[in-house]
Length: 400
Image (tube, helix red, strand yellow):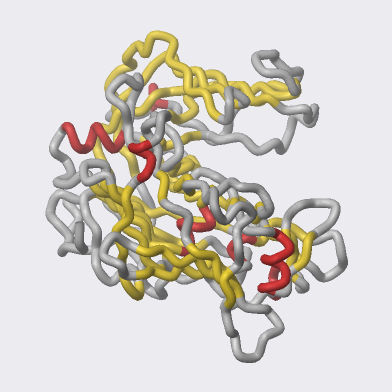
């Protein structure tokens, strides 16, 4: 697929990314009429299903064991109180639907589903009559017994390529089957990172198009290697070349950073719902090439400055070679990986896992790249994203 002009049959919503606070792709969705409080929704290319916490939904935690209830119960807030919406339809029985995540470390119970309107800010038009599962119970495996302030998801929009046998509401297949979007593709891109690391980086999720002008450099087409795996239904790409320049370098000369097992390169999971990134680079070689160091006793790198002081242009590169032989280089800013203060004063720990032969491109990658997913063509298209001005308001040509 190549970039085409926006079609009439496209739908879009605003998304955001925020280093330190939440390194996932998030959409604030206000449901129904009148609209609910905006509910942070994980835009997750690494899972199935579409659910939102309903009225009086409970999140349980406090036990480190799978399937065992903990001592902590909280009422989910914010949540979608669908009976108060004048535009809802349903509820529809879901036969005990459950969504497990992370090896069943998190299990969402959704007895019903409803249809209603999704509303957004920043001038994006509403999307009417969308079906979503309504959760009444969220169980999280956790050793923490602090019953206030724990992180939990209020809603997840799964966008992984869906096998036909998966039950429950699914947004992308629904939009396609109803003819509400004209293409199996969906694209995600972000504006340039803000100068203030504490401000969100704004982006767009667009169903039905691969728009031009939202990326820089070449847009390369890659095979979705997920279709070749025994476990179907996920997005994977071949491992790209990792390049880095020392942060104290004056000429910015980049070197290729070797992997832990150069002859056994893993495939890379494209998962916008995962925090940070994993790359199979040799950690010592990565530190030598970049000038970073391990934030011991943690396994993550650290930058030798406070998170707020990391330069916007500091980062490493991933170079993807497409089917046509062209290469797309995607720069991953260290600021976008900022997680917390490091173990040494005036340093910043980065949410980047090195040294294992694993590869996951989480929300941080999506905040840095332009990514188009095409389930029909079984491809992904990748280019350098985070282009200034690319996500300021809804794209032209949206169906209203």
